[in-house]
Length: 464
Image 1 (tube, rainbow, N blue to C red):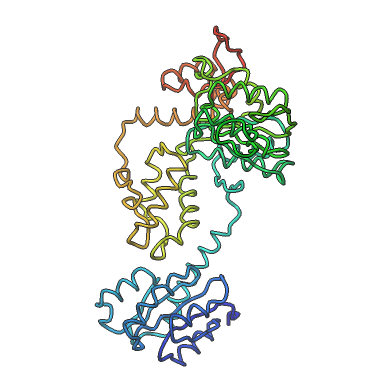
Image 2 (image 1 turned 90 degrees about the vertical axis):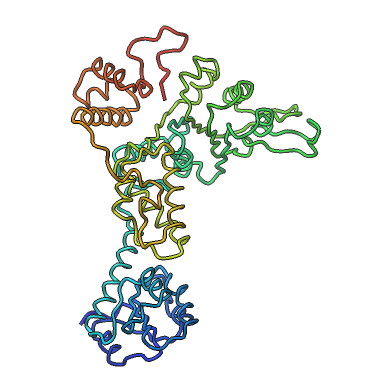
């Protein structure tokens, strides 16, 4: 006999003593209750449990409706027992379809119903194990197991050991702030403030005061002293998000602070010593911004001492499905019914879609699907990706070109745009790699020029 470690919630107006005995013999701890309220109270912990809802025992309609909130408990696997023809009632049919793993019709076999409840319990236990599994790659709130993400996690741990400025580059929505937080939380400054500021979201005329603060009376409306973000981060980390959108006049002030490590509030006359670590991030092509005069090269080189590249979601392979399931687990409480996961067409669409909005778009699509889904599994239609289920037929030449492009992209991401290292990994010459970059329109991924530049920028300037 199995040890009695599994809990069964047996909801019935007329419980069967024979059935209860059969459950006990099979290793279940049985608790018989007569209402939805008692069923909720019976689940004393968050551990998995089996549930048998005996709808054949003459529950009144309003009592049946009350079971809906009971059946949404995420740690109970429910099986329903019904009388012949009972599921012709639309409300009962919806209740069983949306919330129960199985149902049996009276008269039923005792072994059959014990096996069904055991299966429901097993499915709930699997979900509990998956949500607690620490084997997948993770770094704080970041999740991933592909080569690019594992390399990112290693970089985070390395740069966290130093106090040098870090520059995070990557497309919008890839999670640059999560990387900055992960670096801060693994650094010696983790017990001090982490202060973020979005340089592109604050009007230029207010940015100076946001960064450095002001004294009372510095301008009309300055009724009291305000501490700026730089000063507020003293002892900790200042995260300058979207640094590529910082106005030129603010760039000069920030450069002065980085040189002197002192701030002076607007309207003030005293220089204040500030000890902060600077982490900055942007999706902007900084080389182009410097060539066009939109960003100071001297400031860029002070900010970009250590560089980290965020891989785009489309380059993360199976991580797409891993992230989608992680978000489903995180937000499934928003669903009106228990969701079992993603339908096969949804998985296909997740991999076929290009994800221009990266992880941020994936999160939004999954959250919307959780709320809008009307079935037990999220479909491609729920994700609004129905047109991406079918893979468009491609020629052999197109397939080779796509595979070549992906291999080059991943190699450059792993080696942070260094052509020589990427070419060595791909087994081709540096010149051949440069030619392929041109033919695929991928020059933007080049992290070092093929020949010394002829402009004003030094050869150490990297493309992001």
